[in-house]
Length: 435
Image (cartoon, rainbow, N blue to C red):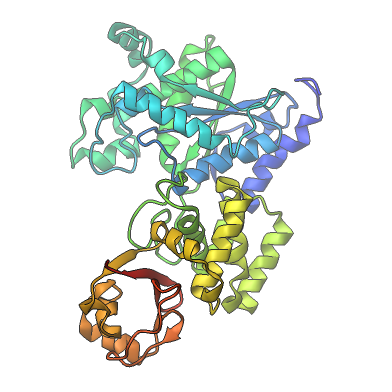
């Protein structure tokens, strides 16, 4: 298929339709649908902040944005902010972030590229994914060039009117962060001029930065155009109906894509533990399941919520995409064993591997004396009084044996060494004796 083949038209128009039925689309600039319907190839970019050497599940929103765009025939550009990452975006932040050095940024950028390859197709073709680093142009920019070619196009009132700036004025905003929107605008203008990238996508909190880029392109593209020749699409911010903060584990830690930071088992469990009120949204945002399949899973939640079929499909699909199907199957198997009556199927090696996947404790003889001591030693409850109440309610298990008497002895350890302590349906801890 050539770059100008008209067969790209229905696929690209379908991109917006898909975002709408999935409940993701927040806003577009005028003319986006017409541009997608033109049949001409189009490139779109989303920026990623390389402040760590791994993406986390919050980044899956823009990653899936690029993935869906590519599946509909568009050419995705993943822009890592090697330059802007040294400054920091004030959007959605209450304080200024730490600045990173060049070596750290280079390491982070390389790691992020490897993770994006699990989602985007970088092989040659009309929709080939491309990765760019804005340090390539921002790093060569002199202050005089920046002020003359970019800064002069932005008035102070225009910049002060942006929500990302307004929200930080009272708490303090350095000139460094104040200038961020102009640098992101310069990114868009550079990609538009040098690579023909006509579309920027991002979260609703990035709308001010996106429109700043459109304004710079309009002012620098030449001619007397009243509207920018480029376009923008914003995604809704993901708000959880259950009130839980998306992207954080129960302990408040980020859920990373790097298995060295978040194990495949813990990653799988994060999605498996999705609240019934959230799972339909997550199926729409973080899978490629078709509409009828998603709606069937919605129906399963309403009809048989205890089966958690939707959560299992979600957890397996996302884990398989990030870590591979083998890792997803293993995480599923270990999870089923740990949370059901199938602990006997776990080998000693399986249980040893759980040390990196669930909270693990090595306890001395006194802490293994009875159920109450283990519960407190393993941090299952904040106090002895709470432990006694929960045990009396039947919510405490050791090796899948329900224990209601705080003074009860522990069951025999698995493989002569391990006790799996479970509170409620989903909270598991691994306990071993001290040598």
